[in-house]
Image 1: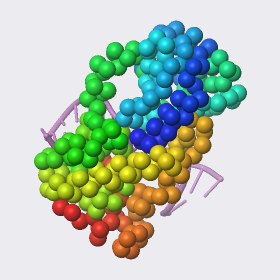
Image 2 (image 1 turned 120 degrees about the horizontal axis):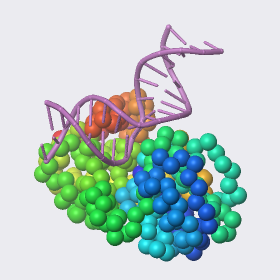
Image 3 (image 1 turned 120 degrees about the vertical axis):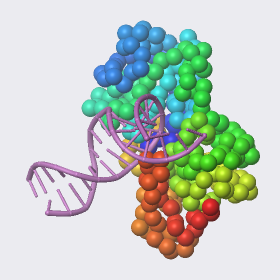
Length: 272
DNA sequence: CCAAGCACCTGACGGC
DNA sequence: TGCCGTCAGGTGCTTG
C-alpha cells in the first residue's frame, strides 16, 4: 500500500531514470483508470518531454514540457515501473513508450488507482490537491502539532486525514502511535502538547527511516525499478496482532478506527 | 465538527 | 477439491 515513503522512493527513482526522455507513444489498455478522456490524454502526452517527477502527499506527479502533469494515485495496489523492453501483463492500465526504448507502465490489480492529466495551474485549483495538509517531512513537529491540537477527534483518524497531515496511511500511523506510546483512540484534545510533539517527531523519524529502506512491501508495492522495499521488516505492530509487544511482551491487539484496523499494544499505548 | 457505513475491486486465505 | 465468507485499505460520498 503505497504511502508517503513508497511514493517518495518511486518519484526519486523515476526522476533519476526518466527526466529528459520524451514519450513517443501512449497506450491505454484500460481507459477507466484514466480521469481524462483517452483521446485527449494520448494527444497531450505523446511527443512530450518529461521534465520532472515529484510527489505531494501520496500523489506521484510527472511533469511534461507543456507544464501538464501526469497525476497518479496508486491507492492500494497501483505500480509505476520504468524499464524495458516491456512485457505486457494482465493488469497493465497505461503504457508510455519513451525515446530510449524503455517504457513506463502503470499497472493496478484492483483498479482503484488512477491517472489524471492536468495543467499545473489546474492541479493547484483541484480541491483534493488544494486542501492537502502539510508535508510531514517539510514541517517542524510544532507546525504539525498545530494541525491537531484541541481537536475532539481520535488521533488515529486525524493522522489518516490527508487534509490534516499529508501522506500518512494505516501502516505509518500505527507504527508512529506505537513508538509514541499513544493509544489510537485517544482524542487529540486529551493529549498533552509535549506528547504531541513526541508523536510528530516519531512520525518524521519513521517516514525518514522507511524512505531510507526503500519503502515497505506488503504484497503489491514495488519501486520504480520493480524492486521490493525492506521497511516491512521493521514493523513493530502493523500486521502483528496477537504477537508479543517487542517492549513488554503483552500480546498486541486490534481495534477498528475510522474504518480501518489499528494494531497496538494495550500496555504500552495508554496515553489518554 | 466528527463518525460510521458503504462503494469501488481483486486476490489471498481460512473453514468446512 | 472447491465453494464461500472475510479481509486488506485510500478516498469520496451519504447519512446521522
